[in-house]
Length: 258
Length: 329
Image (cartoon, rainbow over all chains, first blue to last red; front, top):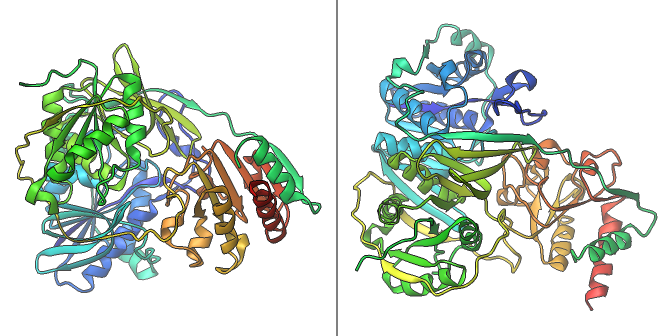
């Protein structure tokens, strides 16, 4: 079974993240970059499945700048079999539609039975990519799963929604997205790190996938303006001297918040 | 006779709850639409519920309501609604398509935008219209930046963050029409069973709540987390938590506010025993008013708090609850 895991490099949420105020693009040099944690959980699920099902091949597919290869290699050390990295300067600032087209083309090229992604990335917080890819590939998708069972050519699981939880099932090939209910990824061990050095890494451009990022026939979302919100100023800070709760109550009442 | 739709139509997908009531996101979506054009609601629900749902959408400002019955397709995930949205967009030719940035909304908007090859903008906190069309406003990196996006051409598909839009449209009586939908036959997952989340309390839902009280590591135990709930009930607020409180197992995952949890933009946010790690701040710093109580005077949450109390949460919060209860009585 061919499992595709979608992963990406993101600015570390635990540090300050910056946008370039002229281009609107992430300032990659300004913040530490890491593999997105939810994508690591998706890979962990794939690796766990590989331990239970025969003949699983795990391919990590990622789009990002050339410099992301170093970060993405960690996925190979964690147990992925190969990496397909789409790196193309023309894709900097690609919108959701173009990203979905690129990823779908790369996935189709690699071949797939099951595509696993995180439910939302920690940088864009979009949460739409799995559904877009499913539509472009013409396969079912089951999003926001908190449990997954793969057997008899089907993927099933519990899908958490805003109003409840549902049991869903889909015939393979299919796309699923998972939540952070899934276990965090294992740390790569020494053996994994050594083995990763021999695993295939394929770097592709948009042209390799037959896509022209500059084609004008499809509408794209473009950034018109970006501005930095002035940092929130601290207001009143008091040290409790026995009446802190009462003073806070007064503040809430004065501001008609209680 | 075919209804003529206004040139400035904004197509709004209204989600219907399992109970038949409109999802709470409906008011903000129709409000946002009314601000830039004429709201046309699309409601996908059983025929027996369509009339009352259309009426309810009118009360929230829908000038037109298209209803579509998914029929036996209702066990297919997302695809029947995407099919209905495609049919509605073909019919209405709107200037924009608005969908809630809910879990279901994101699936539907993603599939619809990919299918129709329209530009997609997600998690907008507002929309506007300029001379070239509809512009979506976004708040990114936890509110640190504001970004405006628009499509190069064609109407944008926009998912709107719940609770972010305050504009409300005037109530009206909608022109109701049954939409005819040709199923696309696109492969879909099947819903085998659904369990509605039991409403365990009368508290508001965290997502979209006007007031939020959140607790963190400083509560020290599951028993003592009850203090957060007590204050929330006095304020009529939803209950949230930091990742530390969730990871400690004091509250369920669904309470988590922050980068990997829910983003909230309430009128009032009260943080109890929460230090304000950047992960948490990313999910709450767009709150209108931030109040924090923490024993550590250097806790980063004080840097963004409008009112901060440095003190023991176990003395300050009970006193706050008593003072607020006394005013109510």
